Image (tube, rainbow, N blue to C red; front, side):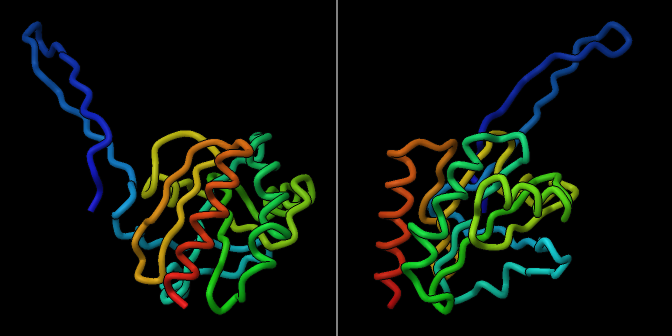
Length: 172
């Protein structure tokens, strides 16, 4: 279930008569069930979100023009992934609207030590949010979103590390 993000009301005139239009956008918040998704790694291998069941994982969305995304992903390997067993934790960095080629280039630019994923249509991002990169979600082994963070800063990265550690430890 998604919480309502905002309701935007506009008046549209059709044939000179005013008609109200409501547009509702949704996004994923803490406590929601993680949306199901399918993405591809740099080599074109498919990953289904169902494969992550039973482990804590992070979904982090990036785009190739995002400097803060590069900074975050460059730190994830040594400061988060190397601490936990792959059986209990995964970090899924998804390039929204990106390709295998751009994922490979972005991994090199970010100095990421793990494979990046991509979603060529951007539809996966739309299941989670409607704007802003990086956008990061911590999901527990039951598939519940435990943290949502937008943008990157030292404080936000430290908070991400703390939440991941807490959720992994709760589920050992």
